[in-house]
Amino acid sequence: MNDFQDGLQAIYEEMVAWRRYLHQNPELSFHEYRTAEFVQNHLLSWNIEVRKGVGGNGVVGLLRGSGEGPTVALRADMDALPIQDEKNCTYSSLTSGVMHACGHDAHTATLLGIAKIASQHREQLKGNLVFLFQHAEEITPGGADSMIKDGALEGVDAVFGVHLWTPFPVGHIYSKAGPLMAAPDEFTIQIQGKGGHGGLPHQTIDSIYVASQLVVNLQSIVSRQVDPIEPCVVSIGSFHGGSSFNVIAETSTLSGTVRTFNAELRQDVKQRFERMVASTCEMYQATYKLDYKLGYPTVVNDDQEAERFFKVGQALFGADAVHASPLIMAGEDFSYYLHHRPGCYMFVGAGNEAAGIIHPHHHPKFDIDERSMLHAANLLLGMALDYMA
Image (cartoon, rainbow, N blue to C red; front, side):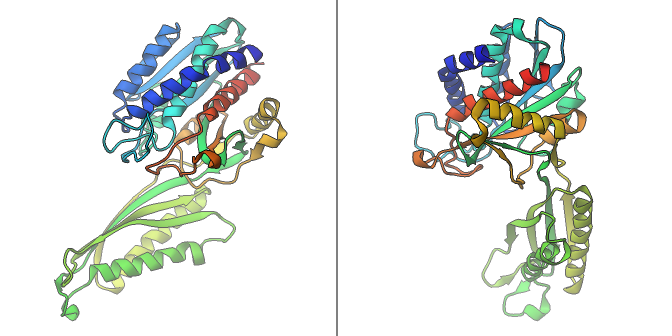
């Protein structure tokens, strides 16, 4: 492991340069064309076998070791978000309205660093490494499922991934066995009422009023219908209705998300949600259209691979820097890989309050402490090498 660690340290500045280039040139989900080309060109330059266009814009690299052994996959996501970059720095996004506000640029640079150093020491690998550069993590249906269907996991024995995470401090790592990240479902509700004059409400069916009641009623699913010890969130993120102060709106639209960890609870909440929408609209004689989409499954880590995380993490960073993660209500389509192969998803601290790196993911001023990339690279490679040992 020492040769790999020394190699990663030696190319740290190169990893930073890759990350900053990608940060300046972000691409949205399903449009990662230049990013994929950037990745594949680097992999080919290191004599790594490459498949491009996997499941869409995915890139898969295969590095064959010199010895017989298992095949371990490491994954990074590549896509950006439709957010305007508001940072004042030399590497701010050059694309209006698009930025890497979740760290995927750094994930890609981290995995490229691992690929470069591993290719220089392939004779020490007691097995093979597969590098999964995934498109479209940020939007359902996501890229993981399509890449798997296109053979990305063929021959793979285990899979590992990391997320650089600014809520956690740089220098610390987190994971746990079992459920780790929530199943993120989404919904849109269009309320159809009867519009009319603002001074004559009795002649109308006020869609804004109905939608407002629905906002309140839906919160009772979590507060009064779900076991309090079961994690569950119902959030309304968008409310649109009306266009004038003196007109009662004929239609209003709500959209939001439901987050759960338990598969049975997920279905139960969906049914309760549907009944709540139907009964509330019926009460006020409104009609509705409900689009309720099941998103990614819950991220569930393999018990044995989670144990490996603690063993490897403590050897690399010391016991004080390795933590059992809390449940994270964000979703991740890494869950699909874990449905097919044993593995572990891990968080690497990327926040630094002293340096002003405090903004949450998906914020216009999001940034990371770039040293977290080196920590993530050592952790991922450490997990792979330990599995091969």
